[in-house]
Image (tube, rainbow, N blue to C red):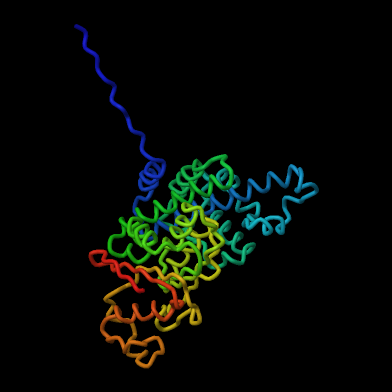
Length: 347
């Protein structure tokens, strides 16, 4: 009697895992903390170039509402909330030159050119591509790799795919960096749980230590998944680490989320509250609880301490009162404590 063998089902890995493995192979001797800016910067560049190219094609065709339009007119892109990408920064130009020995200089120049044309991105994009520890061959390989993401898709599809890859890579880099990675990334499962508990359907959402912006991304996802209107929520944030703030600005831009009220200053939320007058409907955060060096001795008489001065050697009570201070009368807050991932609620 003949025997038959069942062919083993080969499960193809998700796109983001395949990309991560390939990108990690190209890392070589670069620390994950530095390498993340290279990879995430390229993903962001691919996103804004895809969106620009799609709009460019519509304007060049000049049909319907775009009749007589100039595809090089910056105002046409501004009207559609699309970043203008100058010729030397477009993905097609960089991919054509990916094998050139000066590709690092070209990518740094592209980042500079984009910032010059788009004020909201000034000081945000990484210029780390011409460094000596990133050899041109590896950079060219990364450009080819990222170039295959969402190739030929429409803007909405491209934003979804690239946004998902960006978010996945943030998590993988956080794991690679270990404890330090927690400063810019909260595990997705924790973020999803906090948002689901808070249910931010409508109003002002505030994160006073926003990291790379995951709380905001998930809040907008929650609204969309529950048939709400994205424009019904507005986001406010603050971050004291400038490189993390840059990641947040890119992360939000890929999702088409307005980040104009996501602020950076190196003093932090306690010493320099960037949203002093804000009364939020929702406060959601993963703050650095148990911080013993939070400058409490400089803030003994601060107006936020409605329930008593917090101890100078531990920031926990200060964070809770900071949340309460920024809540509207009917507002609610949820926070994650990193140690054992405890969840805290206020009102």
